[in-house]
Amino acid sequence: MQKQLTVIIEREGDGYVSLCPGVDVASQGATIEAARDNLREALELFFETASPKELQQRFHEEVYVSRMEIAVG
Image (cartoon, rainbow, N blue to C red; front, top):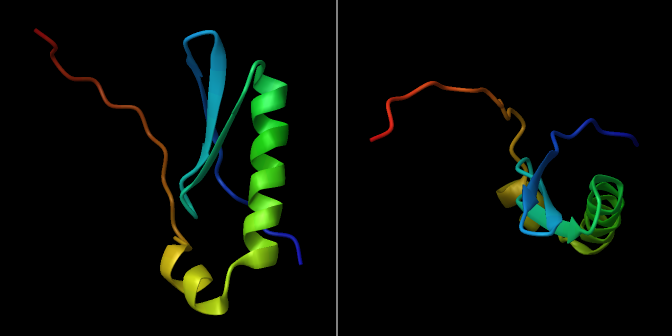
């Protein structure tokens, strides 16, 4: 079964951090591509090993990513 998941990748220091907020799984890499590939591997391992109960607890069916403007300072 294939599933569409939301992925967020952001620069952190000299590398990139990747996050799938739908199941709270994260990874990292030296490049955007490496961070994405490492997250894919982490997600595949998670789905292979997680119990049905853990999947039910951690899987968020609806995840929205948005931008917000606020005053700073």
